[in-house]
Length: 395
Image (tube, rainbow, N blue to C red; front, side, top):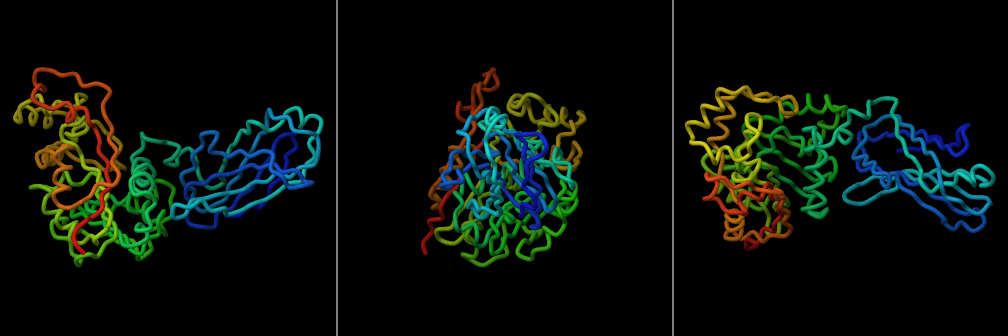
């Protein structure tokens, strides 16, 4: 990244920077405004764009402008440097990519208006920033996977582990959006996503629709293969990290053999991240396109539920353009594995996975009806489980 110009505009209290990103993509950008006295270089003020609540999760190669409006911090009259620093994240570390400075004299009107609450605005000559996923937030499928899921995996559950720069396997990678984000953020030696349904073949179309350059898929270290988690075609102890986001519940016939395969190819001391769908939670039936009641699959008989699904037109929820028939949804539902938090924990511990970090999301309220009386509080109240574990198998 380069700061090509950094100037005051004709309106007093206004600053503008012209930026150029030469890299294909930069992640977790932050801009810092810093004020220093000219006589001794002492810093008297600092403010980051993130302090305004602007989370620039990523920007692709291109030209940008940054406007800063100053307001409400009186400083003693005198000569100052106003510095603009541009930061980005690489492998869990904040790196300063560029810096530029202005020499100013604070007096009169500028002194009165001050600089306590800068108003930051970023613009692009090449992209509609309002359409980037981090501006759309959780209503957008691409955001939920490229931005949210990758950060949960890398930063929250795997703690920016150095193992993320080794060899990574994603079992049940789906459309590959998460894999692309993890690969670009961590730059591992190798990242392989496997899924027999080949949803990853749509990835070029998906990234083009989200204003990302096609060249991001050209790196040979990022690979996708139509393989099954029950027979992973890699040697024992090959991977440093194995990921599984929303896939174990979909393995027809059960996921136990897949877990054994995961443990086999994962090195001793390697890291496992898993986010399994919880069958008894509010998203567990995977039929949200058909019903508003999250527990309807626990209230109706199998035959009645099937009739309702096959006779209902699914709502078009955002799945990055993917469309499925009611018959496909019903098949996927019948293949679901009834995963619960307590049962899944016991399975992992019995296999020798030692929990490292665990996060759960719960419902504010579960309204118990007569049909739900047989189910436990924790099963119904726990909507999501995220966990990382260390593979403690013998060396």
